[in-house]
Image 1 (cartoon, rainbow, N blue to C red):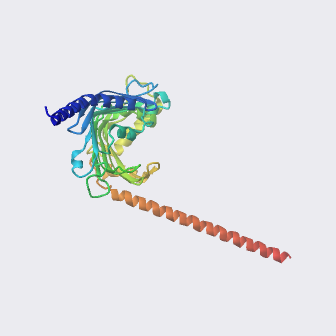
Image 2: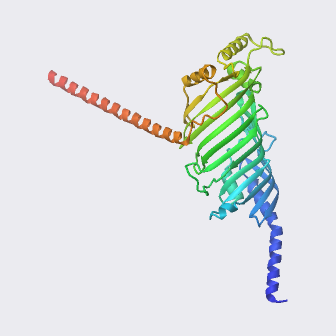
Image 3: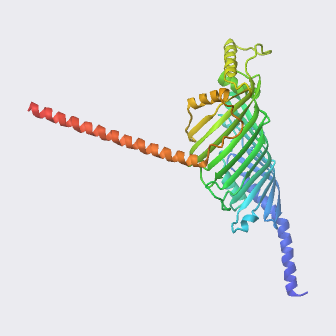
Amino acid sequence: MKRSTKIILAFVVLLIVARLLLPYFVLRYVNKLMADMGSYTGHVEDVDIALIRGSYQIKDLEIRKINGKIKEPFLSVPKIDLSVQWKSLFKGALVGEVECYQPELNFAFSNNEAASQTGKELDWTELVKDLLPIQINRFAAYNGKIDLVNVFEATNTDFSLEKFNVDIRNIRNVEDTPGRLPSPVTASGNVPGWGGTMTFNAGMYLLKQLPDFNYNLSFNDLQLVKLNDLARKYGNVDFERGTVSVVSEMAMYDGRLVGYFKPLTKDMKIFKLKEPGEKRTVGRFFTELLAEGGSELLENQKRDQVATRIPLRGTVEDTKTEIWPIIIGVLRNAYVEAFTKEFDNTVTFKDAVENLKEDYQEKRAEKKAERQERREERKQERQQKREERKEARKKE
């Protein structure tokens, strides 16, 4: 056998051995990486390598909080596919994509640290970089589940999303797209605890600590009776029947946002003369009676609907609204034209940019007024000193 043939055969054997051993080494690396993540720890059952695709799969990933009271893992994913994004490679960009299948996220909110599980202590960006050491340009999750336990702590109310799907594309701006929001985001899911569905569509710019965005969000046909814990706590009423849908458009630029929420109730009933099995206080009896009367008065009779539009403006930390547009919205829905569950298409990213400019101009005007006020104060102080010197000279 020729020497060159022996070398080729040895090289092929070496490649085969390396391919067979590679998943073992990758599995050890991933588990070592996830074993110590501060207050959380993780584990992976298996890893598959697909060299031709330039990808590898992580199977049965779990991340749990150490010394926590929550039985469910914070994150569990039966399968994660991490790979090179080939269509971007053909454009000269070496970036990756991540796909998660049937992921489950379990959040828990509490003032007790042991009963809290939010994942905020983890640097998720760094973890993803360690798992796939190239920049991520696409992230997708299919048929997922998100549980928010005790999200409204005052009433111990939970919130869940099932059959949750999300697709975030062009995160690293590989594709040249017009406008300032190059990353399209779509998401949808069911809301099993409250009934109804959720849809979300947005354009985003994600290469900032606080991303810019322009989104459309809707929750459709949530059952009002599922909100009774909240209604009793904050309104001293409960619902007998009906649904509520919420439609929202919002845009944000450099932390300044503008948009609206539009809640619409359908077939709502609050008051029932007798509620079997429940001891209702006199105060709540009359509160529900008044609420029922008010809803009938402000209801669009043709559609059996009470609705309004709540405009929002400000920052993430300080969002403001005005009461009069809300009241006018209720009256308009009842007596002029009924609101629909469709988006108004009245909010654009340009509105958020203009909002930032207006805020800047307001701050300039405030500073100018402050400077003018200080000038007047100094002028009055000088005038007063001159008067005092005149009085002093007269006495001499």
